[in-house]
Length: 368
Image 1: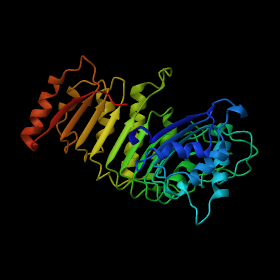
Image 2: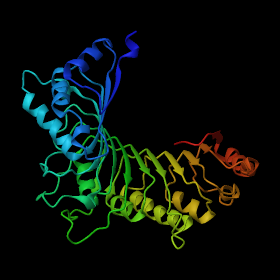
Image 3: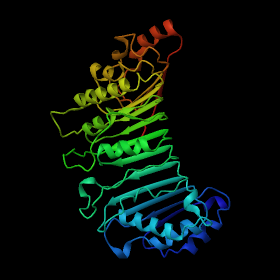
Image 4: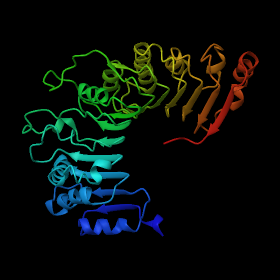
């Protein structure tokens, strides 16, 4: 039964050796292999991952399709990479050099100085990288130099969650020259005059990026720094999942939505009007007024497939202006309130179909 063996999850407390890991995967034969190593979220040296054995396995073990490291600190990652480099030779490159997908979830910096290139030592074969990085506010004074941005020519898909300076994020994005899909979850990180990174280039072009996902930001200013600087000439799918601060009475959902719309508009203007953008998903679990919804799409006329996820709006928004989204062919509504009046869309659909052909309205469950 080889299908039972290609996936392995290892938590702290297991007696882990390289030989035991290799023995497990012998049963999986030629199937794609994935392994997850999880370290304790507490700073207890007795509960840390065996860095030497993991490093040895990444050289001597089978080729992996996916590796996930959930580490207490950056020291864990650095120690594993150090052991990989120690054992790595040109004649024995190991599984590390063939890794396609890597997930790093790191909670803290740790108590030791780090190499400033600790995020540069990633497998050259990587095509997908997912990063959850420790809070920038806790950067150790012992690190005299800032962590260098990630520069990787083969990464095509990047998921990034952090509150690091926007210039580090932008430099990383432009250094991954083949980037095709990007997912960002940016947390609040106030810009200060003492930041080790200072913006020097007003625009950062990602020529190959086709999919951009913005996930539940905590503060729109951070996305302002990112979006106003990007140029995305090839973007075809924009997926935005927004969450405002429910406790902020002055900065409510409607105002937050308009502010995000301004940044998307600026991004569209930077990118020659998003002429290739044909698909747009907006997840917004709050009531949306006419101004809030139309502000997002007024400058995005090329959209042919619009997905509104859990968006509480009145259907009359669409048929007030029949020129709204002139290329629209599919209107997909997911997770709508039970009170939503689908019949209220009939005038819009009938008018569009009489003028332009086929407009479909799809219904579905809410997305994650």
